[in-house]
Amino acid sequence: MTPVVWSVLGLIALLLIGVPFWVSMGLGTVAMLVGTQALPLTLVGEALFEGVDSFALIAIPLFVLTGDAMVRTGLGEKLLNFAEASFGSWRSGFGSSTVMGCGLFACISGSDAADAAAVGRLTMDRLVERGYPKPYACALVASGACTGILIPPSIAYIIIGLVLGVSASTLFLAAFVPGVLVLLAVMLTNAVINRIQGYEKAQGRFDFQRWLHALWDAKFALAIPVIILGGIYSGVFTPTESAAIAVSVAVGTGLVQKRLTLADCPAMLGTSARVCGVVIPIIAVALLFSQALTVLDVPQQFVAWVMGFGTGRTAVVLLFLAIFAVAGMFMETGPNILVFGPLLWPLGQAVGMNQIHFCVFMITTLGMGFITPPFGLNLFVMSGLTRVPVASIAARALPFALVMLGVSALIGFVPAISLFAVGP
Image (cartoon, rainbow, N blue to C red; front, top):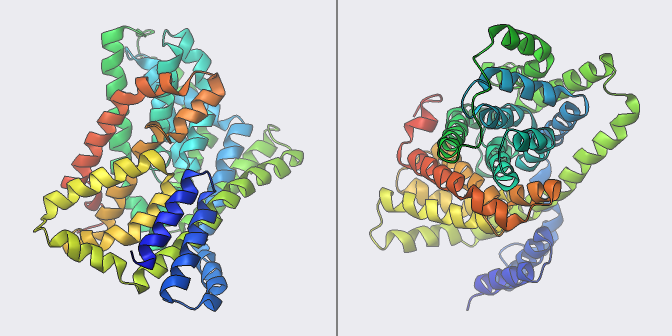
């Protein structure tokens, strides 16, 4: 076997015995470089630094910081109250409000796990009171929180934009409708299941006065996603600048309303630093790994091998759908992007896929992995919050996973869903 194959097998073996991903990939990459002499080892340090020396990556800790500030200041709860005032009169009112709350929080945090933890803490007791079994309520929040990386701003889109050389602002614009489509699919699935099982019934007619009161009460909370998305889509701010302004608004609002003190800031900064401490080393070593594969011509060889079977665009889309769905079951979105993005994009390019379409299709499909075992990060987050077994939550999340898979397939076969806002 070639040094590349031995290196990849060694990487997989390290992962299987529990070695952290960035360590496994780093050792596998060094072994590959030593075995193939593709790049001098003296360049490894420089390559690692250059991989993370990006202005766009500053947005990651800022979005995490914004989400933390939203929870600590109570602004996140005001978003959920507004969602309930908007949808509470539906037959599946509070369930739909919870999913919508996940979507609103996704417009701020950019992270699935943060979305699930924040919304789960605020809604679980109320969902159970409304008649939802706790395992199903956990599955509902976990599924709605999948939009954390699907609805902009999104850490995943920042990473894939960095890897494939696409503007994060362009990806945010392209991803908004597909992300909302997933959100609506989860809401519709809950409505159907609720009608079949009779978990929750309407609480009354829509109250316009209550809605106006909730809207006014949530004005500062709603202003933050408007600032983030409005600034990005209008071209006034870059994603990083937009994140910085959002942090300022969230923290400033909390200080003025006395829901936040300066003493809370170190803990908030610590949370953001811990997230970066996990994400940044993975990005650094994975970009080095991708660079080594490119120098060794591995993506082009893979394209030639697949195309040798006479594979057309339809087969490639189905292949991508299967790869992304299965990969999401075993690895977090970031590593999947960094490993499969550079490897599979040349194949997509060979069959005429648009690069932006490829990015949106990939992220949407990988998003399903947050509710599919054995990885299923959102399942573990909700289990940790409620002590409900992961297996019970996963079983209730199956209908949502299947619906999300269907939406991903639709996005894969209909490029216009992700391209109409940015052009072909």
